[in-house]
Amino acid sequence: MLWIKAFHIIFMVTWFAGMFYLPRLFVYHAMCTDEAGNARFKTMERKLFFGIMTPGGVLTIVFGLWLWLDYGFSGQWLMWKLLIVMLLLVYHGWCLVVMRSFQDDRNTRGHVYYRVMNELPVFGLIAIVLLAVLKPGV
Image (tube, rainbow, N blue to C red; front, side, top):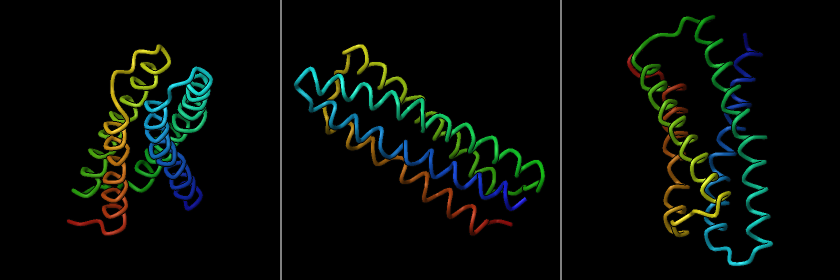
């Protein structure tokens, strides 16, 4: 079971790496003015989203469900953690929508907007780690 927990953590780190870096790419993409740079950012964003971030998210959830089924975790802390995971999935979807807007040259937002959005997953990471380690309400 420790192997499952280890893989859950590894893929969670991978997923968060993508959620931290992709919006940072959006910041730089929004500031980009040349066509070569624009094409480069499109490629980087697509590869990060589909090659690292999405597999990391899917495998985080798979191994998390496996842990949940085997350990039978329960409690208020887990419900809060699952709520935050749901919000992170919404954020993941938002990243896809933004990436597609850049792919289609339809982005209308500036780099400051993406700088703010880039910080949101930090709160999710802090909350999830604290909930998983401290297990309040158990």
